[in-house]
Image (cartoon, rainbow, N blue to C red; front, side, top):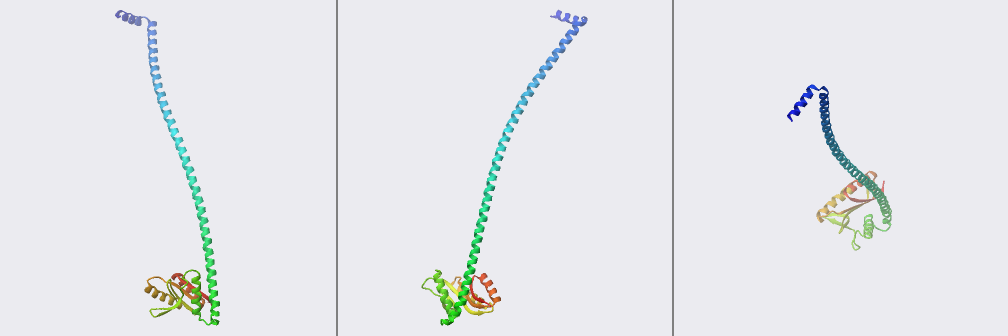
Length: 243
């Protein structure tokens, strides 16, 4: 082996062509080694790329699922909005019906008030021929009306009563009713008198009475003010004629 090495070294030293051949061979080996190294690196890179593409694929699948979920959510939101729109429409329709009912009730109440006023005014004149005072006529008229509507029992009737020495034109203990009757007024004195008597009755019976005021004829300004007070204090007011 030693002799072979010496011969190779002598050939390298003396034989130019041999020296070039060996140098070329050594260069090729180095290149091949480098190529092998590059090939290994490329294989590793391909493996890394494959992992990256797999991860990208998983991300895309997740994105697809998210889009599907978003689509479902938007569809549900759309359905909720449709339901809200329908509910608003139904609510508005209900408000319209309530408004119409309220308007109808208001018209009916105005007609009833007008009818009662006309009846009071007309019967006020008739009571003169029937031998009744206006106060007596109103008691009989309201008693019959309240019995018919079932607001008082058939054996009950409005009377002229007194509480603590104070006379009351219209009175009933059960249900508790306090009322005043006058043929003419040009001020709010009658309604204030009724409120005072109602407070006395409330104190005695420990409950709020039903308050009724009947006027045959009232001056315009006084009638307007009494209606305002009546609405505020819960008084049922009937005026036959406003002058």
